[in-house]
Image (cartoon, rainbow, N blue to C red):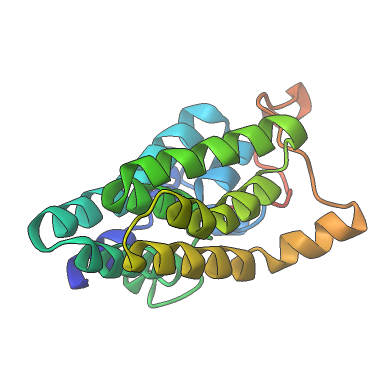
Length: 205
């Protein structure tokens, strides 16, 4: 669990952008350190590596714990990695990301088929509506019932339920914007007027 929390605490979005662009990602866009804000602000060349790294920091410790000590240890380690992403020790427990990519990695580590199913739900919702926040909330909410339907052990089902609640809480501002019709749809390509610098837009992770 300690290793999971420390891995989850690594703020790849913050460090990568600061290293390559000299900018604190917390000062631009949605002010979030997650992959969506990085992608929207600086494009896929920055957002995609951050997304992969955020997935890996949930996947590696969770898979290791599951293989060594079983599903319960894997679930606890994955939960710790998600907590680290949300409140990183390396940022003195300040606000971090919204856990979605790290949660995906954790579920791929503890229950691969469930993780893939959740990713499938996210992808379908995202392609239909192009709201990363909505896709994240629906995908997280689907984890517990899918885990139960797949007959995973109770720690995995409980983990799915807790992840659904946690992701929804961290996206409560996005929910309010969705209800008001103010949430921005995700654009795969930045418009030309955005290429000169970062923009102020809401993000999911």
